[in-house]
Every structure is written in C-alpha cells, then in structure tokens.
Length: 561
Image (cartoon, rainbow, N blue to C red; front, top):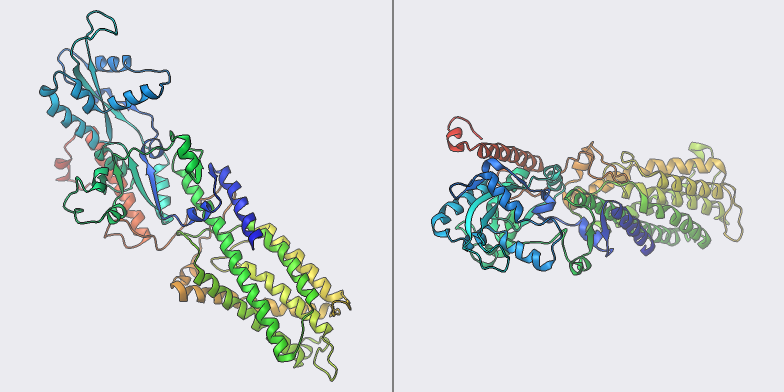
C-alpha cells in the first residue's frame, strides 16, 4: 500500500508541476482535494493589473488646467526604471489620493469634492490617482519650494481577466467558495465582485476587529462573518510579489498568474486523491476477501489452499494495481477527504461478497454435479480419498479473475462498464489473467499441489465470474445510498468526464450538492449558477450605465435591471 500511494502522489505531483503548480509537500495534494474555500487576491489574479486611464473622466480642481495637463504632470512624476525598496515604499504610500490631499494647500476648498469623486470612481470599479504640483523658484531639488497644489484626479481601470468569471463559475460548480481579498477600497471590491459574479457581500478589513460593522453583521462572530462574506477590502495580500520567505513557507507555489491554474490544480488533486481512495477500498476488499474466503473453505471442508498459489496471486496482482497510479479517473464533483466509514464499509461488504462467491463455487464444484451436468466438464466431486489438486487450480483461477476485476468497480463512481479505464490498467489486467488462465489449464506442479483443469473448466470459471461480477456495481450503489443517499444521482448521470493530461476542467460537469452562498433564493447548484450569471450580467449593465453618466434610478422606473 505505501508503494502504490507514494507512486500515485509522485506522478500526480509531476502532473501538477506541468500545470503551473509546484508541490513542496506531498500531503498538500490531499488537502487541496478537500479545499472548499479559496481566498483570492484581486489585483493581478482576478484582474490583469494593467491600468488604463480614461481621459474623459479626469476631474480637474484648478482653473486654467485641462485633462491633458494633469496627464502630463502625472507622467513627469512617474519613473520607468526599477524602484528600490525605499522608493517603492514612498511611492506606495503616496498612491493613496488622501495622502496627496493632505499635502495640498487647497485641501479645505476641495476636500468634500475630492472624496465625492473618489467614491464615484470606486462605485464604477475605478481606482483614483491624485496629482499635485509644487513650484520650485530656484529650480534645484534641494530648494524647499512652494506649497503643494492639488490639481486633479485620474480614474484608473484595471480590467478583469478574460477567464476570471468563467473560472469562478467553475470553482462554484466544484463546491469551492471563492472569496476576494483586496487592498483596494470596499466599493472597488464590490464592483469587481459584481462584474465577476462573486457577489457583493463584502466588508472592510476593520470589521474583523469589530469596527465599521453595520447592523446586519454587528451580532455575528468573526468566524461566521468570514464564512458569510464574499470578500474583504483593505487587506493587502501578497501574491506575485511575495517574499522568498513567504514562498518558502508555502506548500504549493503557483508559477502562472490568474485563478485558472488553481482550478486546474484542484481538479488534478481530486483525480490524484480519487486514485488513492480507489486503491484503498480495493486493498481493504481484497484483504477481507482472501482471509474470509480461505478461512471458510478451511473450516467447512478442511481445504488448505496452496500457499505458493497465494504468492502467485499477490505477484500478478501487484503488477496490475501499480497501474492505478496512472489510471483515468473521474474526479469528485465536490471537495473530498478520507471518509474511513465509507472506505471500510465498502471494502468489508465487497470483500465479503467475493468470499461468499468463492464458497458457493467450491460447494457447487465439490459437493454437487452442477457444472459437469450443465457444461459437460470433468467432475471435481469429492471421493473417498479426495484429491484437491485440480480443485485448487480451479479456485486459484476463480479468485485471481474476480479479485482483479474488482479494480474496475472500486475505480468508478458510476457503472464500472461505463467509465472507460486507462489502457495501461486494461492491458495489465488482461496479461495477468492470461497468465493465470494458462497456469490453471496447463500447470502440473507437485510442489504447489495443483494440476491443470483444461480449457473447459477455464471457460466455466470465466463465465461464472462474469455473471457474478455485475451485482458488484449494485452493491456499491447500495452502500453509497445507505451512507449518503446520493447513489442514484450517479446511476442515472450520463455526462461522464474523463481526466486527460492537461485537460481538467474543459468538460461540462453537472454537479449536485454545492453549498449555496449567502443567497436564500439558491436551493441547488443549477439555481446558484444561474443566479450568479444573471447577477454578473446585471453588474455589466449597471457598470455601462454608470460609465455613460446616466441616472440608473430613472432608467429603472421603466426597465428592470
């Protein structure tokens, strides 16, 4: 088991690195598979971090100065070369228009208007850049110069990434709640959330400290506030420009910008976790099946299965199960984790069923003439001096075939014959069972106490296993229904998404059970997605109306936005 799980995680880690997510701690793959909340930075992650200026919206506060002059002065104050840490700190502080306003000598005259314009820009999702100038009569930088004069505000627009809205929709469909963490103003965060369909239930970071809370959230504890919020403003996270120390402390390092790489990594992690979970259920089932089956044969008929043949079963089985690490699987539609009750219940029931199958086969071959009478094969019935060598070969083939066939049941979420397995797994299974069939047909090994049973018995055993294979899916669905009540959703689901290399998230997935966000109208996943798409469209319409300086209240008297 450790070998299979380690190889699976190692191959999965390599696959994640190809998608732009470098794993520094293996167990982080399991944690990402169970992730249900994603906190995302806004600037550079949800948006392009490529600011543009709309000259038509520039506000001028000094007579005799036009918008072109404001742009020219802002350009003269900018630097194209790289800044050192001190320069970056100073410029970063002065980027806040309020800091520029505090330097201005005409602050008292324009303060109310400046704040009004800043709020108006923020409601449209626009940042504000203040421009002030100072006259230096002597023309030297060491001169004290005159007072600073505030001359204008420039609106800066940071457009969302082209894939942000779609990526957020995919994340919601996968059961991952996306929250925005931004250092910008609250109004900018809300407008961006409206455009991307994330919701506008956002609060300033000071609300986490008990300040600036409105009446609706005043009584909420911090953990509940965080859970209900769609994001927080004024937080100042570090993503692309994170320090080396922060990168060193992380478990997964993203090498590509945007959210799409995270969603791809989530799907890949769930596929990796699904492979490990499938193998764990299979390992529990086979352990129960071997121990219980051979124990019942020994207790009821005093039949001792040859230990050497158990070794052959294990060797052929190991070669097949190693291919699980590269199998094609269907990731869980929701965050997944180790559910021991599900794993052990499924393993025990499936293993018990296989053990009973072997006992019934032994009884029919040893105590009755059913197989000779129906299929005309050689009788293996008990005699005065019973010879178990041919019966041991028959039991070996029956156990080998159905034990490895169980892999196809445990690896699938729906019907095992619907979800196509990987070619490597199918090839390993066919080769292993071809070897097992040839051994049972031709091997006359006195040291292993077996004797060949011929092709007639081999065909009967294959038919017997095929017939009793189909109930395994029904048993799996029944167990899932008892534990969760959702098995029928997987039985009737027709849209099967197979994982391919670098292809996670491109297929349409119909998922159930996604927790709705803080919206009482959303009662199911489809309702949630529909409402969010409608909300996003509504946000686009409102943004266009505001950008055109139209009165939205007047428009809503005739039209519903």
